[in-house]
Length: 257
Image (cartoon, rainbow, N blue to C red; front, top):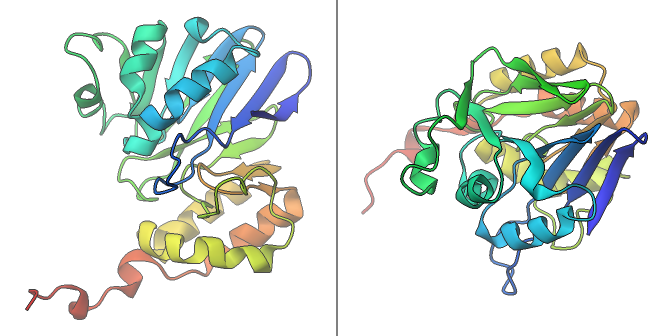
């Protein structure tokens, strides 16, 4: 089922949070996103084969999948973009991803299906015209991928933050924003400590986001952070987190017995 994040009649942002087709619950929960502006559509982080059928069917009530113009990928992990070949076949969309990953994406695709359809986002990011609006690809390198982008929608003031802010929630528990930040921390603490590369990078990112007008941070996994107060709570928290290489010692690099 689609969750309407924003809709002013011309511009709409939707989230799909329950499409992972996995009865055994061994796969990580993942959110997918659709932005529609004046009849033009972009799909963000569409996921892999476990989400494709459900996402395709769920989209039909809001936007014809055949008319997708863009598939925007934060990075090249399977839970982000493993279904890319099916979207390339089903629509005429172009795929935008970090320039570091443009030559890796074809490994998900049929031979000959990607020619002229994959565009690299430069390291500094870019602005993308979608209908009458501009979507901004925001640098998020090393969080956790070396070539990584988040996508900011200035109309809804939503930052689609990829893995930054992710929480590993039980299936069916990701559909509502965080209400009690302190009780939410345990769901995201271990993830950030392992998947974010360092506190230095987190601080650079926080400094950038504080210069933006963000009303809602919506990650690719788990619950979102809605409203200036909750956004700032998250920024304050992640700014202080040791993570990644900050936590590594020589004990992590020893030959197994």
